[in-house]
Image (cartoon, rainbow, N blue to C red; front, side, top):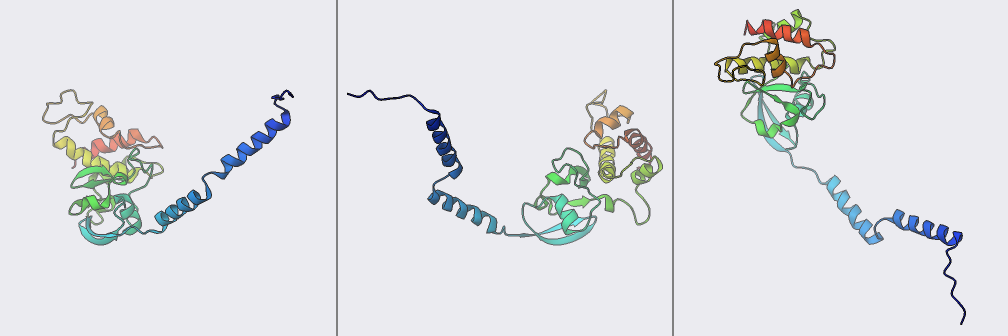
Length: 218
């Protein structure tokens, strides 16, 4: 009986490798590929039903029909033309999109518009009284509390909300006495309470000074 030769040749290795690459590149069987493509096409082409909603922005009501996934920030910027609120990180980390909802500051990039029917939403455009700037806005101008200005609308809205929190007696991690009726608005308090708003130009000293001055007027 002849002895079988089980030695592996270089040619066999190359042929086997080429066959494996072709198999991996082919992916799913043809039938499965067709089904997968059909599902993907259906997902892309099926429209999401818009829903009617009424939002009260800067004391004005707006009747809209929106994709239920639309964020409050995108509604303000893309549907109402209120571009003062900026899209920075779009992940709730920089604070450039901060607005006030019923007097409390929120990141509008993380909020769905559908959540806020019936709420009073105030953006940077709604803070001034006609030609009279809000005290926080005026203080930012007086102290040059900005450089490029991109974060400024969020900084100002956040400062307005923060000052209301201080008046309400809310403590912060910098508060020496969390049971005190009202915290002293020290530099450490301001920096801690405004830490959710990032200024990439690093205008923080002027921002702090502006807020301390505005606190005496609002």
